[in-house]
Amino acid sequence: MNKAKLAARLIFGLLWVVFGLNFFFHFLPQPPPPEAGLKFLSGLMANPYFFPFLKVTEIVVGILLLLNIAVPLALVVIAPITLNIMLYHGVLDPAGAGLAILILVLNVFLGITYFDSYKPLLKRG
Image (cartoon, rainbow, N blue to C red):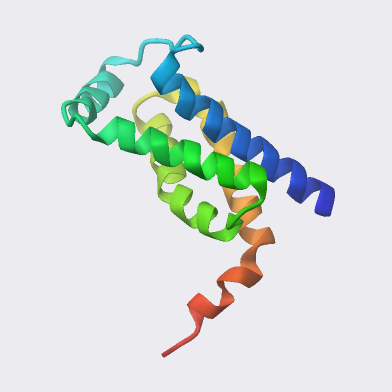
């Protein structure tokens, strides 16, 4: 399990760093989104701080995961982003669903492997 946990953490972290940096440096070509996806993304792009903030968050989370620093916190921070990516591809742009599913699986797997870290948060009172 430790090897799987390490591999998942490193792959997950690398994905966030690469795709976060790609926003700023454009080294990976992005296929154009379908019309529904373009409308959604255009709305987000209309806000000047949204994508830079999102991508910096992704890079920081990726670095934390790669360096094995505050991994449970990093997983909590990235979970809503993972869910939004999954919903975006599930509803608006199914062509990218494969990578979205991989991200979701890695996030859930790592969340389960670090579950003991979350137990104090789930206590009553």
